[in-house]
Image (cartoon, rainbow, N blue to C red; front, side, top):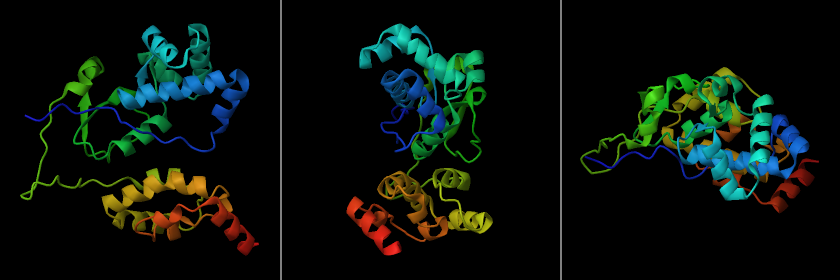
Length: 247
């Protein structure tokens, strides 16, 4: 019998530019709002993976990490719900904090786990392509990290590669320079191996950070021609050189 599966993840990306909802949250409540929001993300990804239960225990954990008073933390959470940063409907039904963005990032990051536990009622995204999903009921989530799993291995003792690939829309949502024939691009994406798809997704955030001006980024079709993405991580000086040449 193998050891229990860890439901959470150890790392999650943060965009270099927040969307308008988060910018307005910070503008309204200041830096306390950002530190509270990031801490909620940490607690969600670390434990259940794609959501976190709201309540006094959550607020106490946030206070322990960033030393804010409970009233401020509660106010930030309420404004996050009002602005749609967290899904208000699921909060009202199940008292959880989650969003499409949280769930998309988690299911990408957990794709190589042998098994993850998913509560169908909590979902905001399509998980038909998540090949390692185990469905659990709302009342079973307390035992979500205690499910025993068997790891399948080949004759050489190496873990077999997942047969399911990453959905094209995941790439399309992350790569914000949306030009070219989307249908042809999807076919190109589907032909890539899971390993290459994974590398492509992992490097997008760093590529966007290195080349912050979207007009100078590669078209998605050209980006997918790469097989390692190491050359996408370019320095600031190189970025300035490219801009001068392009001008």
